[in-house]
Length: 255
Image 1 (cartoon, helix red, strand yellow):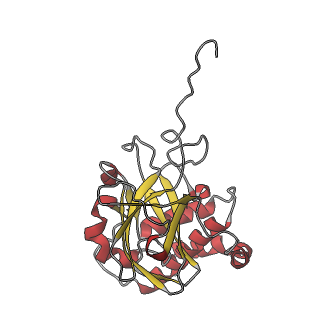
Image 2 (cartoon, rainbow, N blue to C red; image 1 turned 60 degrees about the horizontal axis):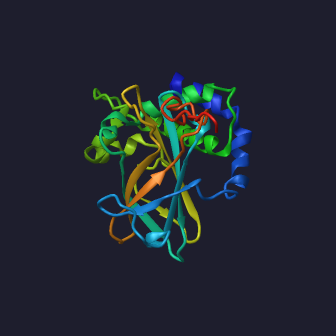
Image 3 (cartoon, one colour; image 1 turned 135 degrees about the horizontal axis):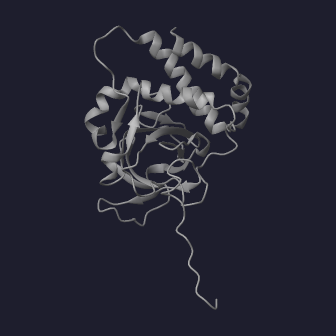
């Protein structure tokens, strides 16, 4: 194990008590704050049941993991059927030009980000934060064991616009609970939680608050969902704090 992995594991081991306590809290909250909205190919809301194909999707930002350039979104998939369902072919669309301005950190991009987050001991450690960082810790340790010497340089981030073409090559560069890590099962009348790390920079002038997710549930047709994960609220998140601040209120004289 190299110096990076040793430092990473040592920092997380200091919080082992939090990880052990997570199991007792995992089912206290299943759905995210914002329910997803089914849409058609034209991007318009469709009048269907709240959980098409038997899966209710919701999301919210993990604000305790935010920083100036990074935001973490947790998505929850509730299976309201009596059968196991398999979710596959998940893709993201923020629209243009955001798809070329927002990227998805992978591989060492994720582990270096997580190491910096772990060192920020002054932050609160809610369950969602511990779950994400624990998953990345396992991922970092596994990569150190599996990686063979190579002259190729693995990418540290992928633009959203290039995710489709890069999908086959980034599977091994994502932790197991990452939203784009591959197909996953959701047990009947239970749920699965997935997360994704988003990176933006000064080119992004608008508040990134929603995304269109395409996915396939078992053998059903691919469906699209408009997924909101935060609102424009002052001091809500360090990520895009200026862009996501609510517009200033105007007052009329005599009111």
